Image (cartoon, rainbow over all chains, first blue to last red; front, side, top):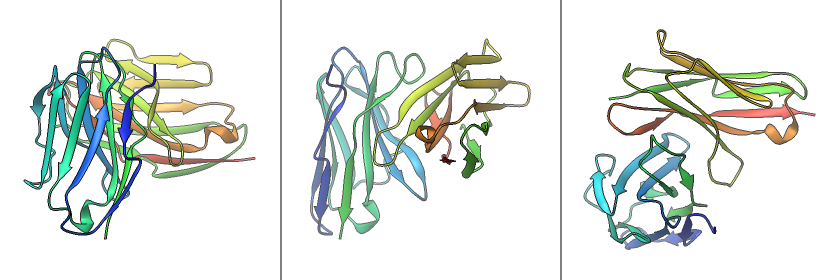
Length: 115
Length: 111
């Protein structure tokens, strides 16, 4: 199994530009999570999906952030417009049956730099 | 909601010594407590987890203890090796279905 696949690995963009991060979960996993990691705030859950349906998006910072999961094998996290304070590593993770029933498998992350 | 505190934020030990990382949580309904290890520039990976029906779990040099009354749990690494150097995260989850992570402990093992 290739694991959770994220793209791109690195993204450098200018303030105001749209950024789209992509994730392919492990085949057979029905829960998908987007996390943001910074030195100051640690690992923060932004949103998670169960069976392609968004369950909890209370961690999404503001309306500039949106996430979709059109099918079981693909999800996107979009930031529009991006701001320097969005600079962080964004991780996608998947599991079977939610966060509490089986281990989270993280992707390699996308390091986002907004200048 | 759940709040997880993790201590210390940094820990330096000599190779062969033991390392202990402690976490406290606030939601008494939490019943799942995993630990993740993140090496520099890499993704977090699960190393051990414990559920509220057990007090201790061991896997080779790693052990986790849970005290539900006091609402704290700890990670113990014995006979530390340089490759144990990483950031370790505790997490707690339960009543809300969410997993809340601690801020992490940077462990350095000096040869």
